[in-house]
Image (tube, rainbow over all chains, first blue to last red; front, side, top):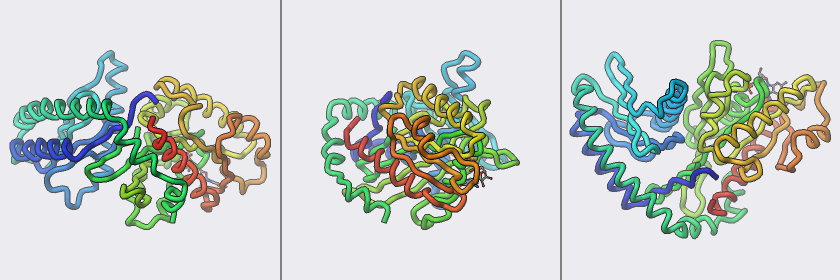
Length: 161
Length: 195
Ligand SMILES: Nc1nc2c(ncn2[C@@H]2O[C@H](COP(=O)(O)OP(=O)(O)O)[C@@H](O)[C@H]2O)c(=O)[nH]1
Ligand SMILES: [Mg+2]
């Protein structure tokens, strides 16, 4: 396999949530969420109540993948920031540590300048947490094995009923 | 690439339905969508052209219940089959945990099946995967039609590695869940190996 599984633990999850909660406030945003490049939602903050976050996560990753493909075609490594402007709401999308995507949804109560500034700061913090997480996974692959080794065929069969 | 979240106690995996244009990939996902309790699935998203040809991908999130206290979630994707969408197919394969190769049983589509299978192998290789170490199953779809490739020939030509394979009529749902179940199982076994 080219990359190993992404693993999230309680401690790092709390730290990540704290960072995006603060980003939400400081950027005056409506919603902030963190997505894995493969389209899986990692964490969300804000008015996510009636939002389809699973679909948002998948489409965001598709969007980043497509623009990343475009970047390569014109000789860029990637576009690290994407901005989509709507009538009411806007989307600010950025990549952290080449692996994770930060999405900020904001309206006229904020501005692109403010969001950019706050995202930049949050990205550094998120990057540090993610690096720590990766080191932790490298050091202790056993945590994962223990859980998964116990999965039996019966467990898997039961999933479909 | 799977995502194991010890905090929310979830295991997330990505499964891609691959195969030539019009073989029935979207039909597989639509059937799973229709037959799954809304509590266990999200919305199905189709990025399609006006004529319903898949443009970028279809996406269907499923949750299949618990294993050892962990919720299991599977994200199902399809690729666009037409030859000229190769760049999109490569993107969708990124981070894949398991593949369902859907073949079109009509005799006149045999060349397209082979071409698509070779294309899949090449695209996997480009990303550092190898067909021999990624979980995959094969589905021979459209078995309801009259002019179909005999099973033995399919096995000889497409399934040289002896992957789990299934006959299907995705349009009516025959074989759809058997195929899904088989790939889910292979993906979980692979996870268990701890790669
Ligand atoms: N006869 C028959 N038609 C099928 C079957 N599965 C799919 N189709 C039809 O084949 C066409 C292409 O299917 P679609 O799922 O869009 O193909 P995709 O390009 O692989 O996504 C549609 O008209 C389907 O109704 C099948 O099992 N039998
Ligand atoms: Mg399709």
